[in-house]
Amino acid sequence: MELKRSVSIPEQEIQKTMVHGTSTMLYITNIGYYAEAQSHYRKRKNGASQHILIYCTEGSGWISVNGKKFGVTKNQYFIIPKGTPHSYGSNKQNPWSIYWIHFLGTLSEDYAFLTQNPLTIFPSYIDRIDNRIELFEEMFQNLEMGFSIENIQYANICLIHFLASFKFLDQYRQIRKQDESDSILKSILYMKSNITESISLQELAKGANLSASQFSLLFKRKTGKSPLDYMIQLRIQKACELLDNTNLKIKDISAKVGYHDPYYFSRIFTKITGSCARDYRKHPKG
Image 1 (cartoon, helix red, strand yellow):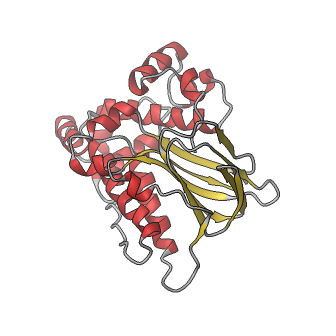
Image 2 (tube, one colour; image 1 turned 180 degrees about the vertical axis):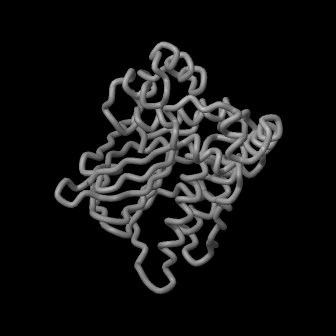
């Protein structure tokens, strides 16, 4: 069954992290996972604005670069440098499942080498394939939890290890997972699972066994945003995912992320992402 998960980081959120040296070296612009993606196809005559890594873990597909077309199968990956004309897609009879990342940074050229053909990571007792997938989930889940500076920085640090796991197969290390007992993390998970609801500050504070003022202070200290601003961010982030991966009408997406006034949703979406929802949808990711 076809499944699409993706996160796109707004340019203004990326720029906020640029004052931190690690984020200038390598950083994520878009990230996603497509399972059994039978309909997946991309063609970019002038290439992409970012480097693209695609890692196939199941099924098969194909890639065409510089006039040469190659098949892509399970446990293979390819990297396309920015500005390189290309096309790629899934095999409809045996659709691929892929992990993909668009990335940039001052060190990105070191990792954005054009593979002459898809490269294989052979399964073995030292392959660490499971660790690599866990590392991807570290990046994805942190970004999915919202665009705090810490989340983006952490994901970008993980990106260095993730890309190194391809270029230097035996040298990457597993990144420790977040402690799910954290009260702020629990609050964010609650926000995500009730994204269509109107959640009060008092309700969140009560769930964390804190006063409203204590909760607000701790939340902003850990995320850099107020609880209300963070909820708005999560809603717009979910809206971006729906715009990227479904054919739902914008007014229906608005309702699914808790905005029953589509015009208000449009104003908030534009403010957060820098573009209107209709224009955002015109630029496919992955």
